[in-house]
Amino acid sequence: MSHQKFKECIEACLACMEACNHCFDACLREEEASMMADCIRLDRECAEICSFAAQAMSRNSPFAVEICELCARVCEACGEECLKHDRVHCRECAEACFACAEICRKMVVAA
Amino acid sequence: MSHQKFKECIEACLACMEACNHCFDACLREEEASMMADCIRLDRECAEICSFAAQAMSRNSPFAVEICELCARVCEACGEECLKHDRVHCRECAEACFACAEICRKMVVAA
Amino acid sequence: MSHQKFKECIEACLACMEACNHCFDACLREEEASMMADCIRLDRECAEICSFAAQAMSRNSPFAVEICELCARVCEACGEECLKHDRVHCRECAEACFACAEICRKMVVAA
Amino acid sequence: MSHQKFKECIEACLACMEACNHCFDACLREEEASMMADCIRLDRECAEICSFAAQAMSRNSPFAVEICELCARVCEACGEECLKHDRVHCRECAEACFACAEICRKMVVAA
Image (cartoon, rainbow over all chains, first blue to last red; front, side, top):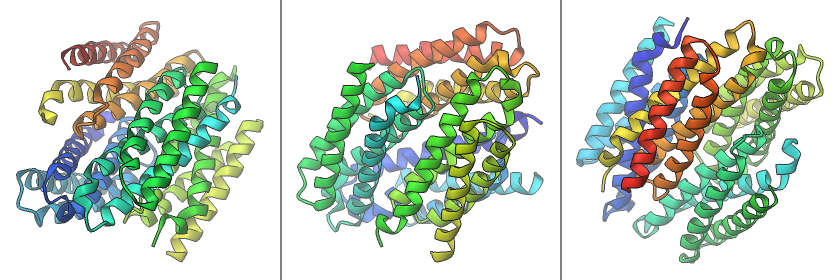
């Protein structure tokens, strides 16, 4: 009954939050930021829910499972968008997103 | 000693959060999103600190004053950026930002 | 297709965030804070998701509906807990929670 | 000019966020939660600003330095409060708080 049970999932969410925010920053520096509009939008969405989920798990929220279910869906949407772009920051972000989605879903099933 | 003393400032922060997030969304829909990169970035910065400040005041945070001091500076930076762009959403956002900055500073002085 | 469609729901979420944070602060000042532990916990949960939902709607998040669905459930849990306590701040918080849950559900159905 | 320069500080903030939220949860489970009211309040304050600072740094916020300055002050206040209580979760939280405060201040000076 402790935050330890969420350890792997918290770490995945925080790694994904960092990757999404880095991708957000890098997209805004691209000359073609217009092409990255959906990526910028989803990077923010995903960073916000990942940060929210990590906080919820670390405070042992009674809603941790529902929040992680939603987090997995946002991660998948962000990962799909990032896959469309041929940049290092997008590729790294997609990897973090899919990894986080998988770990969130595993946690939800185990809960 | 209650959240009532912060009432005006909470409302200004929440109005500014809404205006900044609306401007963020609208900038991402512009054909020339590249020209709006700084505006998109500052809209997010400002929405985040305004939301943070409103939550802090409403829970009677011992750090409400310091948070609102910082909030005022972010609002001014976002407002200055928005003034550079000839769009309704930017103009409305600038107005909300400067109004919020002023009310935050007034609250800080009175505290 | 604008943040206007979410206007009523954003306002309900922000009113509920304020009521929950005020209840959180007031519960921590009670002599019998131990009796209020569940209320303190749920006040924070509810303030966080309401603030998150308001931000999401105001930036026209593609996940606004899912977030508000979850928000409604947290509001109901917090409202039920607040009903158990005979304090003005709990009663006012319960009212804000149930009002917010209803408006969130209405928005979800209409979306 | 990348999120790498903030790496150590982001990690300290996230570790502190986790420790504070764990302490928040554990304090609410204590029989004597009334004695822990200030600790519960500061745990939330500190978790929120640490999470906020980590997000700001990871998106390369133009306000990262000011946010970390404020974060250091909140960490110190939370650490001082935790030192008053003879619990494992409070002691671990105090350690994370002081470590984070120091790293934040070092980052501010280096910036």
